[in-house]
Length: 114
Length: 110
Image (cartoon, rainbow over all chains, first blue to last red; front, side, top):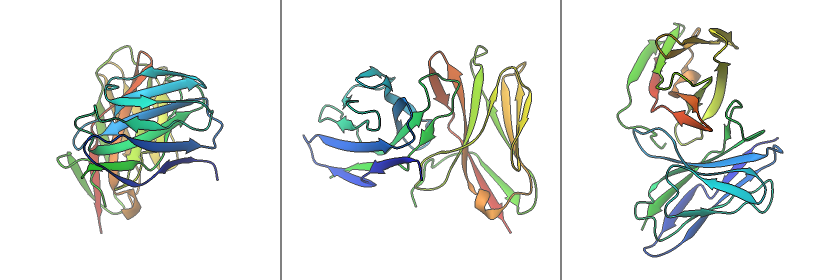
């Protein structure tokens, strides 16, 4: 079945540590996105990529980094510069990078601080 | 399971009744809208979308209505079932991004 796979489901970070969240899709979608979800708030865009080897900052990119070396993969690194990383992280993809196509989501990674 | 919103507005309906979930959007230039369903501990699931050149669109047991005059979007679920219990939120296209609402929790009781 086609879909978006995020791993791990739960992740714990120590002080000063960088952690990487995995996102893989086999939908052959060009565009991929990372969002952060906090209780009582709408999803906020961290980074997005419309094509391989290219990505743009979203609204809350500080403290995060991404890469897009392959069409099917868009890993997110939460760096030690992100002072409030505890959240539910969602990866999404869409056929093309225009906003008149639905984005399809993975089942998320919950990141907590030790 | 995980809670995606601790203080969301809640709609409680009896199984078999119709549900109407509302969303006010902010940008009059938005031309594309989506409804998502999110169950506890899972990612949002696409339900239905609508473009601004339409007022209504129907899917299986769901209907989306768009009122551009008052910038209002609604999702109607017919014959609500226990499996419909979840958080529902809308999204609007603004410039080159989707802006997501905070959501409404739908509770279905027998």
